[in-house]
Structures are given as C-alpha cells and as structure tokens.
Amino acid sequence: MRVALTGATGNMGKETLAEILKIEELEFVRLLVLPEDKRIKSLMKKHKKNKQKIQVVFGNLKDRFICEKLVADVDYVFNLAAVIPPLSDKAPKKAIECNQIGVDALVTAIEALEHQPKLVHISTVALYGNRNYLHPWAKVGDPLLVSPYDVYSLSKLRGEFRVLESNIDNWVVIRQTAMLHKNMLKDNMKDGLMFHTCFNAPLEWVTAEDSGVLMANIIKKDITTDLSAFWKNIYNLGGGLENSITGYDTLNDGFKLIGGSTKDFFKPYYNATRNFHGVWFSDGDKLEELFHYQSQNVKYYWKQIEKIYWYYKLGKIVPKCLISKFVIKRLFKDSNSPAYWYKHKETGKLVAYFGSKENYEKLLNYKWKDFPLLVENKDSLGNSIEYSRLKDKTQSSQIEYFFNYDKKDKEIDIIDLEMVAEAHGGKLLTKSFTTGDIYKKLEWENQDHQVFTATAFSVLRGGHWINPTYFDTIWDFDRLAKKDKLYASLWYDSHEVEENYIYSMDDAFNTKIEVLK
Image (cartoon, rainbow, N blue to C red; front, side, top):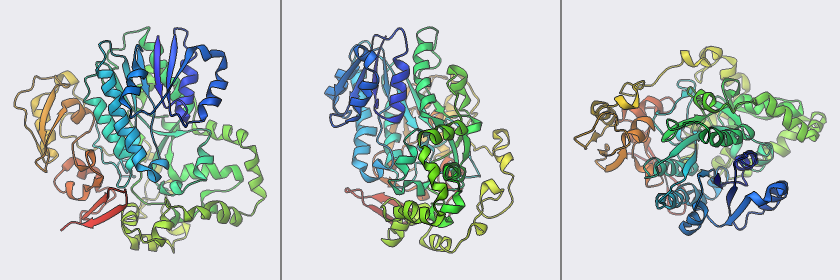
C-alpha cells in the first residue's frame, strides 16, 4: 500500500505522517515538500527509523509535472496542503496558488491516470462563513457564504468545488474544523489574527493528533472492509460536544495558563463582532462513528500545553497590565488587527467585521459589563438566552433547504433540483434527470443569468452555488441575499437587510468597498 501526502510539514500533516508510518501494510509514503521548507530536515530526523519508507518530492503543488510525479503508482493521495491565515491574509496570492491552482493541478494529474488513486481532500469549516447564536450548528449541505476579504476560505471553496466536479473515481472531501496544535499559542502571538475571533462565535475544536489518527484510520478500514459508501461524499471533521465552545471560552482557557482571564487582558473592542468562520457541527459524529478517532478534548489539550510551555506560569507574577501592554496591545500595529484598520481608515474591513465604523467606535467605550456574552446567557442584543439549551443541537434552529434534506441520494428527483435552484434565485436548465443520478453533470443558471455546470451532489449535498466568489475576489452577498432565500437564511443573522455593500479586492489584493446603487 502506497500513499502520497501533501502538507506533511504542517501541524496536521506531521501527525498524519506519524500515524501512516504505523500501518503495517505501508510500502512507502511520498511527501510533497516545498524546496525552501526547512522543516523537512527535523521531520526526517524524527522518523529516521522509517526513512526507507519515506520518499520526498521537492516542488510546488501548482506545478502539474510535480503533481504527476507525486501521484504516480500510489493507492491513496491525502491533500493536506493549504496556505491558511495569517499567511493567507498577508500573501493572498500564495493562498490561491496552493488552495485553488494547486488543487486543480493535483486533481488533473490524478484524472489522467489509468489506475487512479483514491483522493482524500481536506477542506475547511471556513466555507460555512460567519455563524452566531441564531444558527450555531451547521451540517454538510448548508449554503456556503465565505466571509468577505477571507482569501483563504475563497480559495478553499474553489479548490473543493474542483474536487467535487472532478472525474476521479474515488474522492472524499473532509471539512476540517478549528484545529488545536502545539504551536497555536506561539503562532497567535505573532499576528493580529486572534482579534478576528468573535467572542460569541461558536467554535468546535479538534486536535492535530486526533486528525492524524483519522487519516490513518481511513486507510486501515478501507483496506480491510468495504468502504464504498464512504467515497464520493463530504464530511465535517469535528471534535464533538466537549470541544464545542465559544471564542471567549477559547481565549479564557489560554489565559488561565498565566493566572488570568479574557477580561483581564482584552477589552470588548479588541475583537470583531462578525465576519468570522466558526460553527458547531451537528453531523460531526458521522466520521467518529466510522473511524473512532476522537480521544482528546480541549481540557486535555491545555494540560499538554501547560506541560510544554511550563514557563508560562511565570506570567502569574507579572502585573496583568504589563502583559496586556507588551504582549497583546503590541499586535495593534499589525495589519491584521481592527485597531490597525481603524487607525489607517480601512473602512471596508471595519464594515465587514463590525457592521460600520460607528459600531467599532461605540465599542471603544464599552466595559465588559456592557458587552453581552453567550457564556453569560446574553445574546448579541443583550437579551436573556439559555446558553446550555443553545448547545443542544436538537433544540437549535434549522434552516430551510427547500427540499427534503433527509431523502436518500437515490431518491433525489428533478423537482428537488428545481426547487433548490428557484430558492437560489436561478433555475435548472437541464430538462431531464434520472432520479438518484446525483453525480451527473447538469446545467444551471444563477440569478445573474450565468450558466454553470455542477452535479446535483455539489449543489444539494455540498451547498455549492456559483456566485462571484467562485471566479473573482468579490463578495456581494448583500445583493445576492435579496433574491437568494438560502443565502438570506444565514446572511441576515449578522447583516441588516438594508446593508448594500460590495466587498472586493483589486489585482494587488487591496481591499475595496462599494455601496450598491
């Protein structure tokens, strides 16, 4: 059994490699590594006992020739490579090259093979866009509204769609939730990215170790049992109810290491109030039932971090005001922070992340007693809400899918397709459809009268629907949601119907905002 792996030097990739090397049937694992990636040296040193089973291909994922070399004569391809925030915010072109162009090159290389390997493609929770207390639970099939200015989610959206619409015989798309890894604290102290996390955002975590176990368990089970029903599907990879918390909780858990809390080191205006990408997975148990990979929770993670970074305890004797000033506030100068946007008059980002410049300015005067927190049983308007009930997915509000979501794939018919297309403000152009033929290429027309091709699976089961984000750096959901019932069901949870903005980026990835006429 032979495996190709991209992203092996990343946090999830390292754990995946370690687990794959434990599989007895493994002949070799071939890694794609960027020539400039120095992490490969320490990785090879760590696995020197298994070096005879590791092959390294140096090159870039966007290079078709390199991809052909990578996937030749293998049984499985695991695509874990991704340019993620904050690098995707600072170098959006790299994100598009890896997450979109690279995926296209990889898929094209596999499609060309007579004996195709099975592809496991790691996608992201970011595709679901911003969620709050109104719809904190998501499942596969929810409409995809990637957050404005987030090139990471935009490029991952396009990459996933390429996989879904490919001619690969056996693929699976796994949408990875937020990941806990050993370098998380260190990474967050370098950039203003942590200020994007809404205090009330629903966040479901999974550890890098558990994610690696899942990848290896897919291979183990596939070579010993019939997993035919698993392939050509989309799954949400989560950590379970124990790991489903909020952005505020997450920050709080980190600050406990130095004897403090979020309120000790942050103020309400530090963090965005919308435009994030966190959610709890109502169907995250499907992968767990199949592969039994979940063994670590948030509490376990922080205990491990406390052991690794034992010196953080010294922070308990340092005045909290000094930590706030020299550790947290220094990041206000970073171009990824709201304080930077405000100082440099980046109105588009203030509108995207706070609703308006005025909303941000109001927060400047807030004290914590003025700011409603879900964990304190207050919704965003300050009304009472039962947080424990909110975390019960059986009690959560459901969106309207405009077809019977619980239908089996073999029961999906042309009326289902027509109803979903109409809900999007478009229509199905294909006139004939054999019930249950969900992977057949169909023609659709969106509300802008653009004709596109997509399978019934991509649209109904994947939540995809072509809009400007699929081919340009434009996010105009304010306009689209006025005619698209599926988009409206989620977009207006955190946006006003009266909002009429088009968020975009120019060719140099500078942010722009326009008011719709």
